[in-house]
Length: 273
Ligand code: A2P
Image (cartoon, rainbow, N blue to C red; front, side):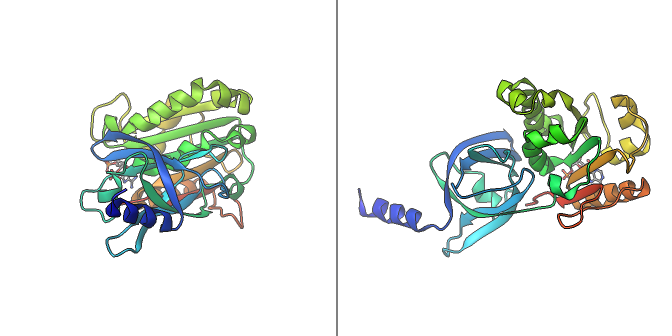
C-alpha cells in the first residue's frame, strides 16, 4: 500500500469505538437510514439511544445522540437520520458508505423503555419525523407484544415521502415469519396510523388535534380518550410535540414515568440537526 493508505489504515485502527457501516438507504433528500456492526459487548434495551458520530478535522470526535432503530436482539445496529446541509454532523454523516467507519460510544441510555411504564393493556407510540426511530426498535421487540393486548404506532410528517421508512418497516414487521415466531404472532396486534400535515394524504393533521377532536379514536374504533387504567404511551418527536402531548396525557390523568419510577407515559426528544 502507498504511504497515504497506510496512514489512513492506522488512523482507522486508532479510532476509539469504531464500527463499520454495512448498509445505507436514502429515503428522501432529507432522510436516510444506515446500519453498522454491533460491538460484541454492547447490550441495550429496545428504545434506548447511544452517542454516535465522526472525527472532526482536528481529530476530536463530534458526537450526537441517536436512537437505536434496530431491536435489542439484532446483530447489527440501525439508525435513522435527517440530513441537514449545514449541520455539523449530518452534513458529513449523510455521505457515509458501506465499509467506512463511524464512532459509537457503547453506553446506551434512555426513557423510551418498557421498564419505565407500569403494566397496561394498550401501548401507544406517538412519533413525528425521525422520532419514529426508537419505535422502529420497539415494534420489533417481543416484549412489546407479550406485555400488551394492543400496540398502536402513530407517525406524523409534513410529506408523504417522509412516511416511507416507517410504512415499509411496519409492512416488514407484519410479514416477517421469524418475528412472528419470536413474538408468538404478537405482531398482528400492531396498528399503524400515519398522518401528514402539509401534503395531501388519506389522513391529515397533527396527532395532537386528532386526539383532541376524537378522530384518532374514531378511526381506530376505540373509546375516546386515554385512560390511566388501560393506556400507556411513549412519545418521540419535536419539543413542541413532546410538550403538547404531555399536556394532553396529563389532562387524561396519565403521569410521566422514568426508569426509577415507572408510570403511564414517557417522552424523549428526537435527534435534531
Ligand atoms: P406541522 O407541519 O403542522 O408543523 P418537523 O418536520 O417540523 O419536525 O415536524 C414534523 C411533524 O410534526 C410535522 O408534521 C409537524 O406538523 C408536526 N408537529 C410539529 N410540532 C407539533 C406539535 N407541537 N404538535 C403536534 N405535531 C407537531
